[in-house]
Amino acid sequence: LPAAILATTVLLAAPAQANLLDPVVDILPPLPIPYSSSTETACADADPQCLTDTIDEMQRRADALVATCDHDAVFAIAYLRVTQEVGRAIDEGIYDDEAWLRHQDAVFAEDYFQAIDAWHAGHKKDVPQAWRIALQAADDGSVSALGNFMLAMNAHINRDFSYVLAGVGLTAPDGSSHKPDHNRFNARLDALYHPVFAEMADRLDPTFDDIDLGPLDEEAVGAIMRGWREFVWRNAEQLALAKTPLQKMIAKQQIETYATTQALMYRTLFAVGPGQRQARDAFCAARS
Image (cartoon, rainbow, N blue to C red; front, side, top):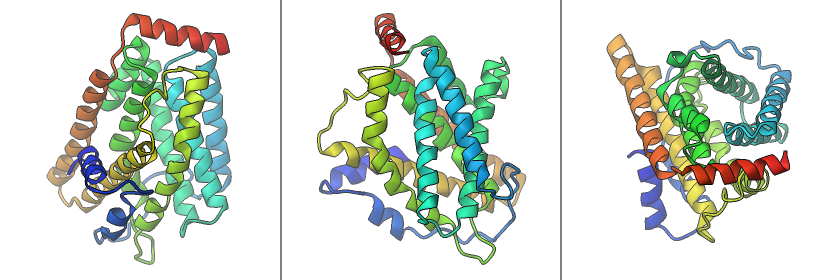
């Protein structure tokens, strides 16, 4: 099932509880993927300084975007907070393979930087379609701040993440899967939901956290994010297992089509008029 449908199905079928999808995600075994060395170069040596450098660069970019109330600031802040949490998780020793996480984190961030930089340099044809939709909506002010968040999250997770996972490798040299480490970060994302949404509402757009599902808030967001992350792992498996150019093309097309379809849906769902954009920009300007 597509991730959003899977998340919604489980949410409606089960009683409200923390980490709603964890039992489902944990019992789904990874496919047997032979070990292959990473094809990516960012932080290939897994130096701990890489994460510090990535966070510093994210902070620099987020500060510049917030200062001008650029609508790209929404994802810049959210991604910064997630990356800081990755660092805390590594420091706390929750992962089996910290080097793999540091390498993955740097590659993932590099994809984001490249998409943003290509777009703003005018090289829009070099930007993946899901990112084009997200970044155009930010430039146009055609969606709410929550819409900017969902569009960029979709582009970076549903589109970029599968390529990153396949590139850095899904299997360790000893033959063990990295899937348990991939799953371990799910619970850390839960803790970011309320503080990040509150920060957005305080700094960028007071309507950001207006959607309130009460006690279902965390369960709903957690279920959706787990569904997305499970979906991208499975797409990465298909990329890794592709033996022919045709199989690789089909795997890539599935990723691109899903991310683009989701982007079109979010662009419509979170569309706003000029008055809402003006109110949002005025609110942000008063705090810059």
